[in-house]
Length: 301
Image 1: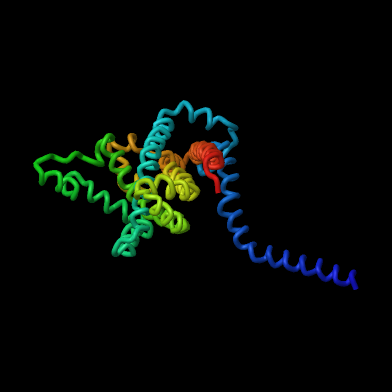
Image 2: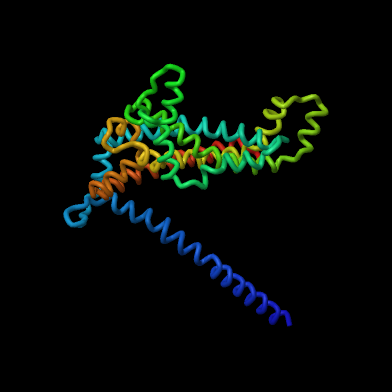
C-alpha cells in the first residue's frame, strides 16, 4: 500500500514538473532567442571585422584596443555619463515628490496621475518630435515665451552647450510618469497606522516624510534608481530624433548607443559597433552590481 502511494506521489510530482516546464517553455524560449543568444552573438561579432559584402573575419580583441584610442567613443561615454548623472537624481527626486503629493488627500488626484503617466504610453518618436518643435530656435514655443519678456532665446538644438540641456529636460520629463507610478505603489504599501501614531506624537509632515515615508519606501526607491540608471545609460531615441546628424551639436550629445548605431548600421562596422555596446554592457553590469551591494547594506526589509 505504501509502495503504491509513494509511486503515485512520484508520478504526480513528475507530472506537475512536466506541466510546469510546459507552461514556462514559451517564456524561456523567447528569453533565450531574444535576450540570451543575442548577447553571445554580439560578443562574437565584437571579435570580428566586417569586410566587403558583409563578410567577417576574426581579429580577436583588436576592436577593444581601438576603442580606447578612439576619441569619439570616449566622448560618447562622457556624454552618456553626464546625461545619466544629471537625469537620474533629478528625475527620481521629482518622481518621489510627485508620488508623495499624489498619495495625499487632494482633489482630482486620479486626473493628475493620468496626466503624469501620459508620456509613458506616448510613442518616443512622437514625444521627441514635439519637443524638437518646442525647442526650435525660430518658431518654437520656448523661445517665443523667452522673447515675450524681451530676451532672445538660444539655438537650443544647434549648440552643444544648450543641446545637452534640452535632451536632459526631455529625459527627465519622460521618466517621471513611470517612476511616479512605481513609487506610488510603494507608498501605498505603508500602513496608515504609522502616520496616525506620528501625528499623536506631534510629528509634522516633514518629520513624517524623513522618519516614516523615506525609510519604508527605500526598497522601491532603490529599484527605481537602478532601472532609471540602466535606462539613462542606454539613451538613444530622444537624441536620434531631436538632434540633426549634420549639425555641430551632435558630438556634444551623442550617446554610446547612438554611436553603436552609427558604426553598425550607417558605416557597416558591425564588429566595432558590437565592441562598443559590449563595453557599455560591462559598465552597466558593474554599476548595477555596486548598486545591489549598496541596497543590501542600506535597505532592511
